[in-house]
Length: 601
Image 1 (cartoon, rainbow, N blue to C red):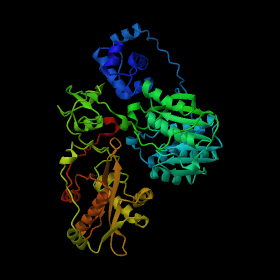
Image 2 (image 1 turned 135 degrees about the vertical axis):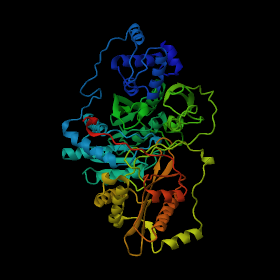
Image 3 (image 1 turned 90 degrees about the vertical axis):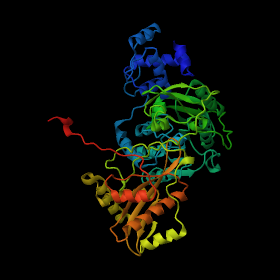
Image 4 (image 1 turned 45 degrees about the horizontal axis):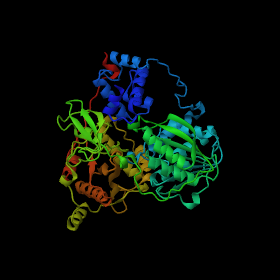
């Protein structure tokens, strides 16, 4: 039975992997798929597929969270796994480190920094670790004797560990490291680290560099300890660990702290071979040490490994141009079953839907519903041919400032309805001709547009307060000073896409904010119209068109081909402007109020 189930889902771990799921179910029941993933180290889709196979055999209940049926309990007993004994430390939950009360403040401060920091890009395997994990990583450095003192090299730092080191030092009253060097390709991440660390008393150096190339010569052999959380592929592990080795001082017993996600035994063998090839040796290993916000496939956790250099440690990694991220290496389709009608749908490279997120958005091709249960991997040599892939629907984060076209409640943005493939999309707007643009500018006189800056913040704050009143009524946050402060922070990150209309020597009479975002699942870029507002003017409609045109021209200049915006159902003037520019309605936000106090009288 174990072999049949393992073969049905092509489980690389084989019968022992199925046994581990049964053992975890016996110990944790009722258990969610995520709980089982964390307990076994198997990816969530694999655990879900195994659960489906066990249900088909009557060994697991159809209700969720899952339990073993009586037949399942009998099988577990026959396998000798009916002993429920858990020796995991209840204090540290198996992580080996406990955050002391004195660092609770550091956790709170890091949560706040995460909220205002750069967003994670899942297309390049980013998934930010929690504030608690950041502090635990600092504690690991201290426990291993790598800190205090010395110099720390962070090879990539989208997790903002550099700020965690600085915040912990600030809470304890003195820096705990002589110097932190952050090497990352993201200007946004580096700028944020520089801005925040400047007031924390820890010396933090940032270097913008593509890690596909060797470290700059001035960073070679300068650091006492290194830390990295690379893309979760063997190639990513080798590349980032190689750069860590390049930056460490020569000689044995220098520490490299390495975070990674759980993989199959064969994949982990590849990773361990890369570690050995670099002349590194494992000094410590903690499963589920890292918790991530996201990373759902891995159950939101990853391991933490303490490596040491030896006399043989050396990096021979030159330039690298091969596959690096998980998406670069995905080659096989997986079958997903529609819960509503039982339709089996292949998902993955070459299929109509390249991700289950896209399938969920479009709905089952037979019944239009869902949800979908993951099933078996399809044979690599026999992928099912499918029509051209449809674009994955975007799920955007809520805008920082609720725009005039915002929905009536700050609820998660509804998903878009299915769209046509890019080749058959109807282009709703094209740049105006020179004559049309000149005519619009003439109608908008004496007002012109320009990029917004700090001097405009009071007027922008007033616009945003009015936008909030239009969208949310009595529930609105309509303090212009609060909006001005919030937009000021956003402006510090980037002024691009922030546009105002004004007369000669006058304060702004109109405001438009367009942000360029990236789909975390597909990597595709799109634009979001966050705000559009114009003061009462005789030619108000013309100024609004001028601002909207400037915003769309900004999108085209940045290579954007899809633009979204949200409008309050009662905001007829804004809806009219949108339709005039070719926007089509794709979703409707719904709002419902429930009685307070649980509805009792």
